[in-house]
Amino acid sequence: MENLIFFLLLLILGFVVGKQKESKHYADIRKRERETVHVPVISFDYLPEDRPVKEVQLVIGSVVVSIDYYKRFLAGLRHFFGGEIASYSSLVDRARREAVLRMKESFPKADLYLNLRVETSSISKGAKKAIGSVEALAYATAVVYADEVRS
Image 1 (cartoon, rainbow, N blue to C red):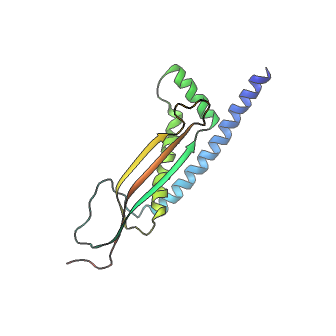
Image 2: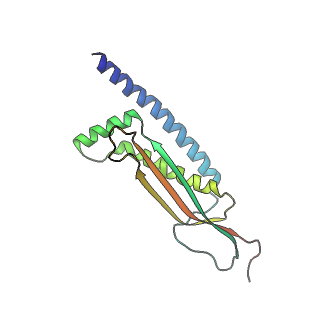
Image 3: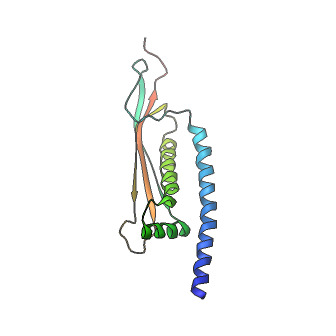
């Protein structure tokens, strides 16, 4: 009986703390996205020919986000019964958005980010009793235009 109570307490604690942390992280992501929304991020390589380029640089942003106990429990149930593991969707979404923000923050003076690529991976895949987490890596070419315009 004590084990069941301990398990339920862990489950409730995981739900409450995990939900609180996730909400706080999403609020921070939305705030930072509003601050950087004016700088375009393009997933193909197009540069206007009438603007001379002053500087280009490869920029990278990465993040590792861990899953909380409650979501791990739900995922275990879904794994047992089959189907989409919806409890992991917000985990992957937060990781991708955070990686793009960190990429932008690594070179904030860019006028444009070209050829954005985002990759995700599980860093605990196949490991027994490992912490479940997802890594997201965002990379692009940052472009800074020169002040003068060609005619």
